Image (tube, rainbow, N blue to C red):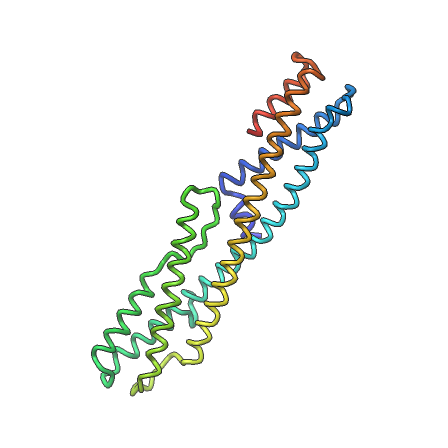
Length: 246
């Protein structure tokens, strides 16, 4: 899916995937070796295999949740600024209707215009997807804040409509549709917060597993020097792979 490709293409994800491949190759080298390895020396190998299996499970979950997260974020963005009866388009129609209706008090018309400008100014609508960025936490906060401003201000704008009696005949919005937009924005807000939280937990878990993988690779490398010999091509290959893991 496009969502998966998006996150796979980040430098961090490409690097992590490559390091996992090197760890898998270390396991393959040891398992393919014809030299007898004492059982007590197999603990690191067994541990590496179990860690790689655990990483694969968590990584698969991570990407599945990411797809849901990005899909929900894309749908919310379309809801807010899509070509149809989106939040921003509806807010524009409300603003145009109110400011052109001279039967409404001037101060109230100015207030609606000020609210519309707040909605129009919010442009942090793309969901952050590179969780390795040092600024990721701030990026997420800015993303949630921008969407919250739109929700709060649109709610305030719609609440004021109940007090107006429009004289114009070309009203391009309806209160029921406005309330539907608010309900959908609140639904997406709850869903995206939940999915972002799951992503954080899964990402933390898979990085902890990766640390175990790297430690197992180092242990295998250290022991393989004595098992295969320091001048052995097998040991040298394992050492190169281990250095590539971390």
